Length: 194
Image (cartoon, rainbow, N blue to C red; front, side):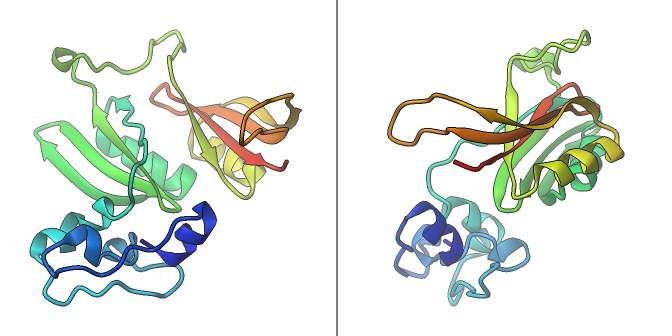
């Protein structure tokens, strides 16, 4: 894993194991797609071709990554790159159907063209969706403006919200805005300030 991410979430960096173990050999989860932000590259000596391709993903540990259904997967990829600064990690195409892996500043997500035969449809055309995707960033105002400029519909300008939350990691103050992307998904750009 990347040392910077480990410091942020309080995890220890995995030790280098056998050359064939992609998870143990990983020191930076982004190295396979353009380098670690800290400049510390993983040792790939003796690593398999599979590690070169997907080993970075297995090194990131447990995460939840959304996979929105879209129409026109290639257009969705272009939108997410322009709106959120996403990086395309991989793409599979079968005729007009696209499935892809992307990340925004190291946070992975996926997308797939809708596939009703597999129970996956895009959001309701009336604008209703069952999932909101929260993108935590340093500057929600800039992300909001960039998404709208790329073609998203503004739902709520970034504003500060105060919450009376409880639990081991309460969020008391949050700067958050909302947009709907051209594919019907609601994205919240937020920053926890307290």
